[in-house]
Length: 112
Image (cartoon, rainbow, N blue to C red; front, side):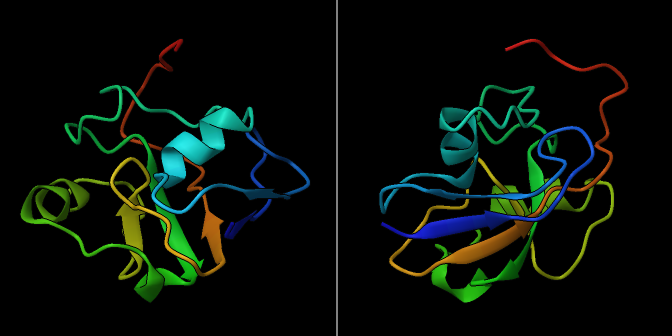
Protein backbone atom coordinates (compact mmCIF):
# COMPACT_ATOMS: atom_id res chain seq x y z
CA UNK A 1 0.00 0.00 0.00
CA UNK A 2 1.31 3.46 -0.82
CA UNK A 3 2.07 5.87 2.01
CA UNK A 4 0.68 9.40 2.03
CA UNK A 5 2.82 11.87 3.94
CA UNK A 6 0.64 14.80 4.95
CA UNK A 7 2.59 17.93 5.79
CA UNK A 8 1.60 19.83 8.95
CA UNK A 9 -1.65 21.79 8.70
CA UNK A 10 -2.80 23.90 11.67
CA UNK A 11 -6.36 22.52 11.64
CA UNK A 12 -6.33 19.04 10.09
CA UNK A 13 -3.04 17.59 11.35
CA UNK A 14 -0.85 20.08 13.24
CA UNK A 15 2.10 17.69 13.51
CA UNK A 16 1.76 16.20 10.05
CA UNK A 17 1.05 12.50 9.67
CA UNK A 18 1.75 9.42 7.58
CA UNK A 19 -1.10 7.18 6.48
CA UNK A 20 -1.42 4.29 4.05
CA UNK A 21 -4.24 3.48 1.67
CA UNK A 22 -4.96 0.86 -0.96
CA UNK A 23 -4.03 1.48 -4.58
CA UNK A 24 -7.05 2.91 -6.42
CA UNK A 25 -8.20 5.03 -3.48
CA UNK A 26 -8.57 8.78 -3.91
CA UNK A 27 -6.45 10.99 -1.68
CA UNK A 28 -9.64 12.49 -0.23
CA UNK A 29 -11.05 9.06 0.68
CA UNK A 30 -7.75 8.08 2.30
CA UNK A 31 -7.65 11.26 4.37
CA UNK A 32 -11.24 10.93 5.53
CA UNK A 33 -10.81 7.24 6.38
CA UNK A 34 -7.90 8.27 8.63
CA UNK A 35 -9.86 11.01 10.42
CA UNK A 36 -8.23 13.89 8.56
CA UNK A 37 -11.44 15.75 7.87
CA UNK A 38 -10.48 17.70 4.76
CA UNK A 39 -13.29 19.79 3.30
CA UNK A 40 -15.24 18.16 0.48
CA UNK A 41 -18.33 20.31 0.03
CA UNK A 42 -19.52 18.54 -3.14
CA UNK A 43 -19.23 15.06 -1.57
CA UNK A 44 -16.34 14.16 -3.88
CA UNK A 45 -18.28 14.70 -7.13
CA UNK A 46 -15.71 17.01 -8.78
CA UNK A 47 -17.98 20.06 -8.48
CA UNK A 48 -15.99 22.35 -6.16
CA UNK A 49 -12.39 22.95 -5.08
CA UNK A 50 -12.64 22.56 -1.31
CA UNK A 51 -10.57 19.33 -1.29
CA UNK A 52 -7.66 20.95 -3.18
CA UNK A 53 -4.22 19.63 -2.21
CA UNK A 54 -0.71 20.31 -3.47
CA UNK A 55 1.23 17.14 -4.26
CA UNK A 56 4.83 17.87 -3.19
CA UNK A 57 6.20 14.42 -4.10
CA UNK A 58 4.78 11.66 -6.28
CA UNK A 59 2.61 13.85 -8.53
CA UNK A 60 3.41 11.84 -11.65
CA UNK A 61 2.37 8.57 -10.02
CA UNK A 62 -1.27 9.74 -9.75
CA UNK A 63 -3.87 9.32 -12.49
CA UNK A 64 -3.98 12.05 -15.14
CA UNK A 65 -6.13 15.13 -14.64
CA UNK A 66 -9.27 15.22 -16.71
CA UNK A 67 -10.75 18.36 -18.23
CA UNK A 68 -13.34 18.95 -15.47
CA UNK A 69 -10.69 18.80 -12.76
CA UNK A 70 -8.42 21.17 -14.71
CA UNK A 71 -11.28 23.65 -15.14
CA UNK A 72 -12.17 23.57 -11.44
CA UNK A 73 -8.57 23.88 -10.30
CA UNK A 74 -8.40 27.29 -11.97
CA UNK A 75 -10.69 28.50 -9.15
CA UNK A 76 -8.76 26.91 -6.26
CA UNK A 77 -7.12 29.10 -3.64
CA UNK A 78 -3.31 28.84 -3.72
CA UNK A 79 -3.14 26.99 -7.04
CA UNK A 80 0.28 25.56 -7.93
CA UNK A 81 1.46 23.51 -10.94
CA UNK A 82 1.24 20.32 -8.86
CA UNK A 83 -2.25 21.00 -7.46
CA UNK A 84 -4.95 18.33 -7.54
CA UNK A 85 -8.47 17.91 -6.28
CA UNK A 86 -7.98 15.18 -3.71
CA UNK A 87 -11.31 13.58 -4.65
CA UNK A 88 -10.03 13.01 -8.20
CA UNK A 89 -6.39 12.09 -7.49
CA UNK A 90 -6.15 8.29 -7.41
CA UNK A 91 -3.26 6.53 -5.67
CA UNK A 92 -0.97 4.18 -7.55
CA UNK A 93 1.92 2.11 -6.14
CA UNK A 94 4.16 5.06 -5.20
CA UNK A 95 4.29 7.03 -1.97
CA UNK A 96 3.24 10.67 -2.15
CA UNK A 97 3.58 13.81 -0.04
CA UNK A 98 0.69 16.27 0.10
CA UNK A 99 0.23 19.74 1.47
CA UNK A 100 -3.31 20.83 2.35
CA UNK A 101 -3.63 24.57 1.63
CA UNK A 102 -4.43 26.73 4.61
CA UNK A 103 -7.55 28.17 2.98
CA UNK A 104 -10.24 27.12 0.53
CA UNK A 105 -12.86 29.06 -1.42
CA UNK A 106 -15.48 28.12 1.21
CA UNK A 107 -16.34 30.82 3.74
CA UNK A 108 -18.07 28.29 5.99
CA UNK A 109 -17.10 24.72 6.70
CA UNK A 110 -19.41 21.87 5.80
CA UNK A 111 -20.16 19.21 8.42
CA UNK A 112 -19.80 15.83 6.72
